[in-house]
Image (cartoon, rainbow, N blue to C red; front, top):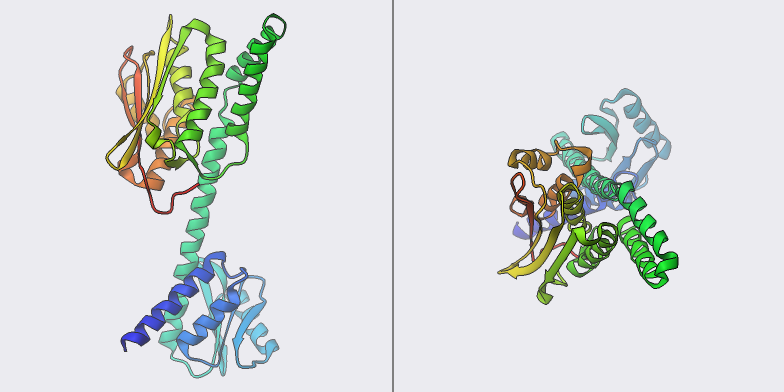
Length: 339
């Protein structure tokens, strides 16, 4: 009995994996075979909204199966012509396909398997939606590059072409590197080393633009350089420190970026001595109610929590005219997180 239960669970897990691409995926025939094995029937067919059934089992009249599928798709109700029975499959209250079973069956068992298939399809759809949402958030961060910064950087580079061509060339390479990292197609994760390189490139360009108004201090412990982190979680924090902390203030300011290990965590802080803000404003920004220019903080906070859990969101320490410190804490190792 124990081995039979283990066999059923193993088949169920395989079916769930095979349903990852939905009823239109390349593994739908394997799903039909698995469902047939679970129900111990003559045959099983699955069809998506196109109405083309994928059959597994002993021979069955294709025209009868197809006609039954079409009937269910048009009426959205159960249909049957012995020895066939067909049930509609609803995913999030929408008709998604049809399950057809042939042979001696128990109605309750077929209904239970149909419900289980629907649950697997719903889970698959949610996972796809989450992936699309994550990609959309990355696109939002990429699109947030400040036109003001781009214009100023290119203006500085152009002004140095004749007076200091070597410096102009260096800054142009930095600008190209910055664009390549920020805008190019990239995976979901990167390393602390790559993110810090992007930070250094961005700050080099901003120092060229702001001159003596911007001072920079970067310290990162070697042991955290290889830690995997979500792509574009640090660079937006540094950009935010410059744009909303240092640029609005009178006189010069400093941006400090530190990375170190604390136990099993990697802790990275981005701190500026700029204009700061009321803590309630920072709270509203993290809740997604900030201005368009502050979308980066909420975006980064949400992505960190989605990957690591609520404990690993951003911590923001700030007050008016007292600067801002943003802390990122991530596990040194997290299962399923890799570049």
